[in-house]
Image (tube, rainbow, N blue to C red; front, side, top):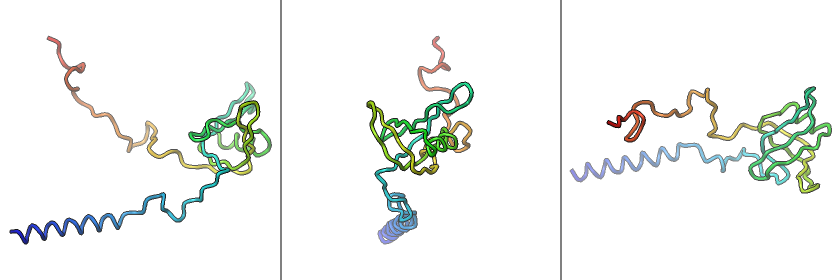
Length: 143
């Protein structure tokens, strides 16, 4: 009986080790991951338009860098037109004028949205459990 217990324990240990080795490495250690660039800002492009539909202002909202105004030169306008309300990685030069950050766009690329943020139509989105509520809920009678 003791030998059987040791055998089951060893099989379980080898099973866990085998599964952990077979898993993909953490994305942080992925060799194909792009290198860190201090001149690249990642965030969502926010565009303001006038009544005629012309772009009057564009901003890049970033968690790390806050909000940066985009200089509306040729590349800035192209970014605002093509990438409105999308997540992008923008490489360029930042300047501070009148206590505001201004970003001159050199190049940009679209990114995937943040992981874990799913829209209401996503079939894999976790849902609230349905059914009677616990004590104190609206289904409980007060009589």
